[in-house]
Length: 258
Image 1 (cartoon, rainbow, N blue to C red):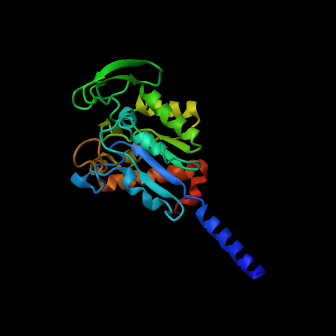
Image 2 (image 1 turned 90 degrees about the vertical axis):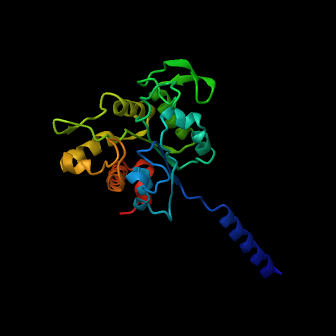
Image 3 (image 1 turned 60 degrees about the horizontal axis):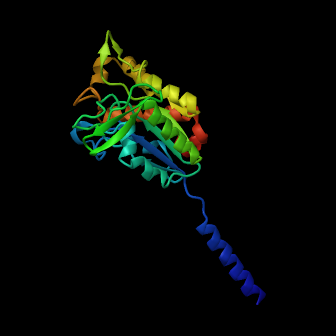
């Protein structure tokens, strides 16, 4: 009888252990088409860095989920309901890496996309009629939306990582034109104000392009000046991975390949 009780006790403990086995952390990626372009297959010779960053992680220890989508700004990623969907599963110990800015400079209320945000990081706002959603909408600053991503992430005891937007293939006098006085600066300021980790992709990638030379960097942009091809995406993903290992947010290196 005692042996039977012991057997069932061990069985119950084993089932309980398996049931409550700790879930793997998730590395969430959010952003625009420079992070994920279309379905991620490289259609039209375009690819975002988030699509090719998975090999830098040990997926037996962490899940990598790229929720970035083309055409979105920091504002429309939220108003589309995409951020709320992530918040439903975001948990303690997860990571959220975010890169927005390319589409935030668009008009606030045009009939094509209505995706722009107010420039800067202030608390100013304006009410517009959104012709796409056919409703009145209060539009905030780029910083306001980025601040929300960070605060919501921290409220879930997850780890926010803010990236400045990758540079375009625009040059002047042999140097890549940066966004150091606009979106790259504002991303850094939000990270500093809200206590988030920061990766200055705008500077890191621009410096790498300059090291390679203008003609070599041009090869990454086969369609336009904004979207990289597969080779460009792989380079950018490598730069992101190296930066992650360097700043090691939440000891993420233990989930990354060597």
